Length: 116
Image (tube, rainbow, N blue to C red; front, side):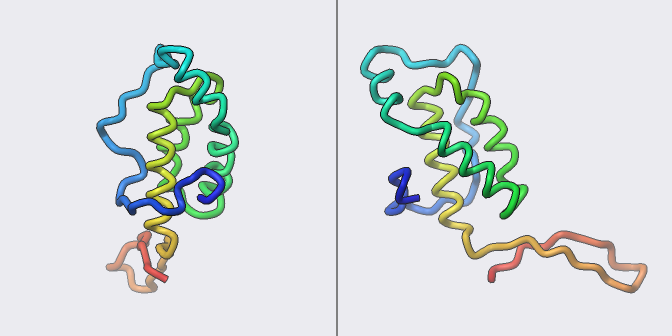
């Protein structure tokens, strides 16, 4: 989080907000935005998120899949969405997924979020 400048951020509860709408036609609108995005290591941040998705939790999969589609030409809108994903990770670092199995036939198998 320090590497991407989100270590002092607020916490959020959703990995990707509903107000973000992405399309392949989105790109940097002007030279100033292009220069800004050239200074940001968007693909490195996506790679880090993919690593976390594999080892930490599948709740990141949809957001990372959506954002990774724009690795070749990200816009500031994509970067803002990725920063929100980092904020979500900061807020859920102490939550883990636990698979439980019950021996009685009445209680089904389920996945439970547990704060560690």
